[in-house]
Length: 444
Ligand code: 5AD
Ligand code: SF4
Image (tube, rainbow, N blue to C red; front, side, top):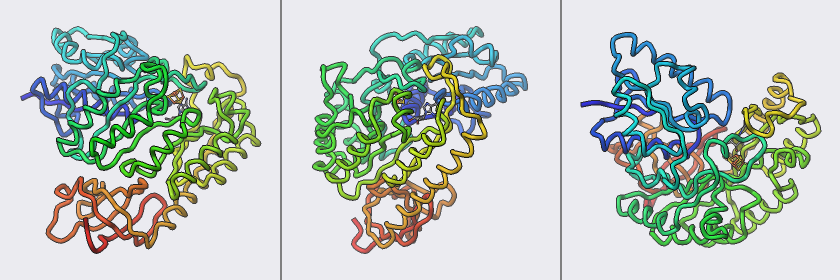
């Protein structure tokens, strides 16, 4: 029996797409392999948002050349996702031993491409073939209790630094009923938590219905009975009062929001084409905290955008401190060819960017730690995700506020058997990036 291995880089959308890639391969009778080295078909689902992911991909693809030259010439290597879309046939210039290249719009063509590659000639498909959503393909989910559900693909925002609109195309929404039907089927299949995915979920429906219908979608999803609803990513300019109200009113929507701010300086926000000011961002945060007391907030921040002065960076530190995020994902600006920012002069030097990044990272760590310290003593409803990465005797669980909690596997139980169940957990200690806890009495 032939086997496959899918390696995923980048965002949650790629994780979602990888489950569909796996679904298609399993439909062809392939079984999952433990490692790329033992697989007959190896698929790289790639990311090109920043240079680091890009470099890592070509490094890893190159290292697999030895498999082919070392006695397994029939191994098929496929490169898909954002690098496949961006580079097309040029993937073969970097890595001539690649057999299949497919783009972000072509996942459904993978079986045909694999057939074509068996003849020994590379098979490439990166053209946008219309309205095919990866969500309509079979899925081999990583988890029995959680599902990624894409609601939009692509992005119309054109932030100056971002390659996503180029490699994922314009924003397209799925039909509201299709999303709800998919989630109803997932619930019937035992899924307790869904994460709705889109580059800009708040504008869901705009292209299809002429106006955003995200708040309505959230309520319709909750009506399926799914226990926990999460979503990503939200753009501050499109986060509507209706959505905040739905978050406040619907118990299944988790009290956590990832709201990328990207920068704290109005000058840089304008240069980034983010289309909001720091004052408008503060106002959204206030509205969220008023409507949903105790909501946890995370963000994305870019350091070293072209022209960023020390004063601009001070605005970022100030904004992060004032909002008091519970967590932040921080990035050093990485120029991406073809984006508007790639041609901007005044690059911040690597050293200056790194030094600013380190200062921001320290602040983020402190904020995350204090946010965790505030949890100590609280009893939180936690969804068990399975064994922790390092130790099978320790469970990893998520509070509704999206905090990771480690707690011992109860005597006589197994971590994998408990995955997907919800329990009350008392938080007993805080660490910078996670909490430790114990089962509270009166388990649910
Ligand atoms: N350089 C650095 N960070 C970037 N991001 C997107 N494009 C770039 C880039 N060119 C970051 C943004 C985005 C996150 C997914 O990646 O913060 O929200
Ligand atoms: Fe990129 Fe901006 Fe679209 Fe996010 S909203 S995917 S950062 S262009």
